[in-house]
Image 1: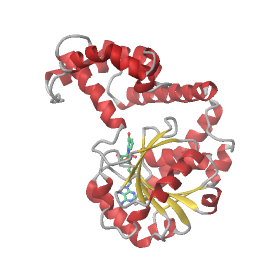
Image 2: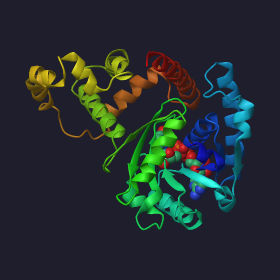
Image 3: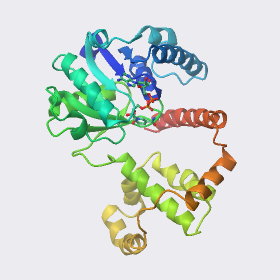
Length: 317
Ligand code: NAI
């Protein structure tokens, strides 16, 4: 990965995710260029990143061994795509989740980027087939889907297009590892990728439990944060089962019938609107009012928790 340090990582789109990616790459010593079509976005991204880095340094949560000043010196911003791509080795697209916009920017990148530059998208749920099909550089295209906020949550789902060169997957995987992320590879494309499929299964059952009057929304969140989530921060559901039985086989033999019985009572896809939605919204708003001030304060607290958890996870490895 040291060869990548000779060139630049280009971040396309300087919103929430673009800023976080820029900080991740700079923290590991990579040169980063931030490109956005809105000059004001670039300016505020640079200011915001600088402020965040100082705050992280003061709270002892800055990633990497470089000072905030050194990390900032690796980041530049611009609004001219051609000069942004000059010297690019890896491009991480972070523009809004809209297929037309993504297709348009990737057509531009396809026309301007040199061969071998990896064109990576942060898309949460758009298929690589829809974004990359027909591009002349399709072999070097990949989805690298982060979890918000990537600075604190290391998982990245790597989703290739069917024509993506395996070397692109391996290089992206190695780069993500080099910057302290935890990449996982999807062996084939599936709607929602994996993280969101698991997350939606949980949301769907939580919805049904509220709808059927089994538990309050607040208590359901406690089941996860004080119960399942405690383990899941360290072990996935499959290893949890492996340890809960005498191995996964014995777990299935012991608990399989009960699991199948419960799962057969799982209802249809929830409509995600109406009375149940209002009830959940009300319960959550009683705890954290849904205005920017309260939500941002809670997000800050969440990020601080995640940073502390990351430290603990490193210690426990
Ligand atoms: P955002 O709305 O905060 O930022 C988008 C940025 O893209 C803005 O600065 C905008 O000016 C810029 N932009 C728009 N068109 C552009 C263009 N043609 N060229 C360059 N810049 C352009 O969006 P956010 O939340 O950062 O999301 C970006 C991507 O990351 C989306 O695909 C989203 O699905 C994905 N993602 C978002 C997560 C989240 O929780 N926000 C989590 C994981 C992935």
